[in-house]
Figure 1 (tube, one colour):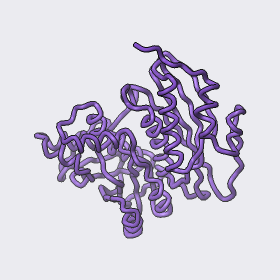
Figure 2 (figure 1 turned 30 degrees about the vertical axis):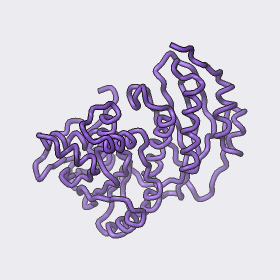
Figure 3 (figure 1 turned 45 degrees about the vertical axis):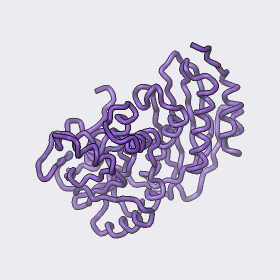
Figure 4 (figure 1 turned 180 degrees about the vertical axis):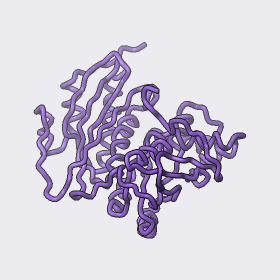
Length: 330
């Protein structure tokens, strides 16, 4: 095995991370802090996610895609609050496999998505660990004061919506592992969705004044519906037969001999990073207008009622969905 080209912490910062830094507030990454001015009339929204090799990404995933997934899963949280991205703090726990070429690839992924989504690095830390590789980011964004929707705002009578398609995250993981018997084009599409999900930032900003509750779908559709139900103190019923599926997901589903088990798997698999919304009935026309403007699929999948918890139905039959999605430590 060839020797790994290790780079010191300060060389990594100087050559790879300093070019990504905010030109004013990051203090050229030469200080221990970033200093941000307040933005009158706005709330500062913060979110943090960690990606661990073997848990959130595969050991053979290219590190540019790992960097982009790190930013995008956090950006998805900002999208659910209708926030405008501003910057991020980064922590890299480099493993033994992360020599200079791997670190360069990681930095190139960050640079590409900084350009795409309009944000800058503000600071952070890098260390070396025996492994596995793990990276984390704390993202900051701005939202007009008092307008960020909560998880806890759903009310009986509200409709439940989801953007895009559901199930592609879990199927994408299976595709990246080489476990799907689909065409190469569909396997590639699903793997790309798993590695580089698309945060719905523009739609989140467009509808923040229309929705009663919002979050992104990361743990699994059913689990995240349950999060809103618990936070809001309501019951929510969803109909899985109208859950939106991509063409690749339909192709996989059509090959299954147990459709109920297959639909539950896609509804609980997670890693979709779509927006899950509740809104009063009167807002449906406005929501669909914004989705159409952005050419984004928006599907009404259920309704908020009394009681508690989630009822997941398939053609009227209530299904056992277990935990409903990913739970760390279970």
